[in-house]
Image (tube, rainbow, N blue to C red):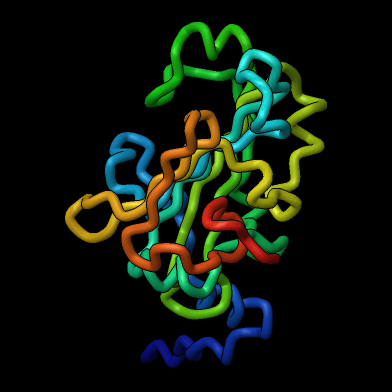
Length: 200
């Protein structure tokens, strides 16, 4: 007798399955490449009290941003909102041999928290970012909220255009101040941009 059994095609996915299948996969490696920090478009060095010496800081933040159009990011302003944080990709670890982290820094701040962030306003995102915060203890790390950071937390900021040409430089520690914006000169920049004087 012939085998009359047949396989029915699966029905349409449930709402949950549909969402999972269409949601873009946001792998950390695609957002930030730890092994090649030279590909960053903008780098921010952050402290809770940037005017004080680094040795007095309870934590040190390094925010590395990749953007396809840095001048646009400058003109429109750059800030972090709660929805920019990809929470399922955050983690903590003992401070390791990261790029640019010295043994003295590892001893001062032995634990590190990582945040992965991205622009949620469009697809593909206009920027993606990785923020790592080195600290003395986990309690301090648990209190850090990237969306609470302001230009007042920025100790240093450098931005590059295509071809790794520096177009922006700010260093709060420089005396006398020696900052430059090669794109907009003295145009007020909003958000985390620390100079010229920022309006939020």
